[in-house]
Amino acid sequence: MGNRIVTARELAPQTMLFEIEAPHVAQRGQAGQFIILRVVDHGERIPLTIAGRDPARGTITIVAQEVGHTTHLLNALRSGDEILDLAGPLGKATDIPTGKTVCCVGGGIGNAVVWPQAAALKAAGNKVHAIIGARTRELLILEQEIAAHCDSIVVTTDDGSYGRKGLVTDALRELLSSGEKIDEVITIGPVIMMKFVCLVTKEFGVPTQASLNPIMVDGTGMCGACRVTVGGKTRFACVEGPEFDGHEVDFDELMTRLAFYRDEETRARQRDHDCRLTRQAERTATPGKP
Image 1: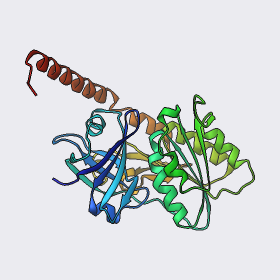
Image 2 (image 1 turned 90 degrees about the vertical axis):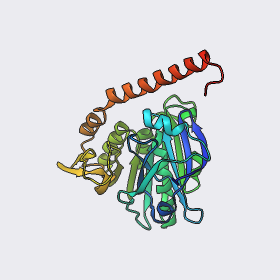
Image 3 (image 1 turned 60 degrees about the vertical axis):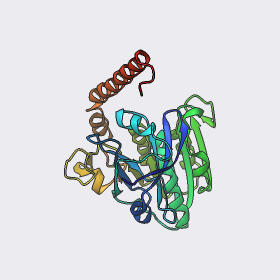
Image 4 (image 1 turned 135 degrees about the vertical axis):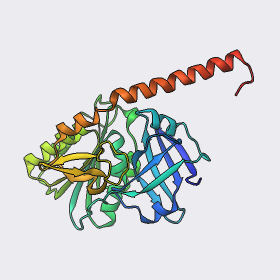
């Protein structure tokens, strides 16, 4: 089957990092691109960013946060297990400038995208600032990995349990007001966060790329599930993105689309929970049953 998991470690509650054998993706993947995988036969296909790659080892790194049935199954896997199938690299790579000053703004699981972006930006000779946030210290991921590629990093938490108390937009506004010329901002995280990041940068006239994560099914643009409106036109995030001009994205429409399958996902999680309870009851009733 291939796609063996080399490393599996917990980054935060319900958030796992996996290093997976995928030589074809490790050789060709670039910052900003993603893979689509399935965990079980007849299971859904989910997109995950290529957070890192090691061409010499033939491995890629992905980070998965448990938000639904499939990510629950994925995050239950451990070293030595295998992913059923994996396709990639997909999507367009991040447009990496040279000799510029760029600020990467990430939130939550979006920090897994900031990591390769910051690395690529620094390798291209840019000055790189990072502003990353989470709701609490416990949920903050990849701070050290990102900091290793940045000239400066600011960490915020909603509750003030670590770093600065407040939102990433507070720190971003402070940076843009500091007098240092910021040539570009790249943002990735919850849609509502990206919306307000783009409102701040638009106020300061700073070009901004937003990395979008709408619903994706086939990753080739054929199904149309990843439609987003950018500049009043329909775009397909899986083949034309996932990064777009943040000042042109209809974030309100995107948030509505992302909520379409919330009820179905809840029912899938409930079915999985009920099945696990049934298996536990059977094991209790029949000692020795696997």
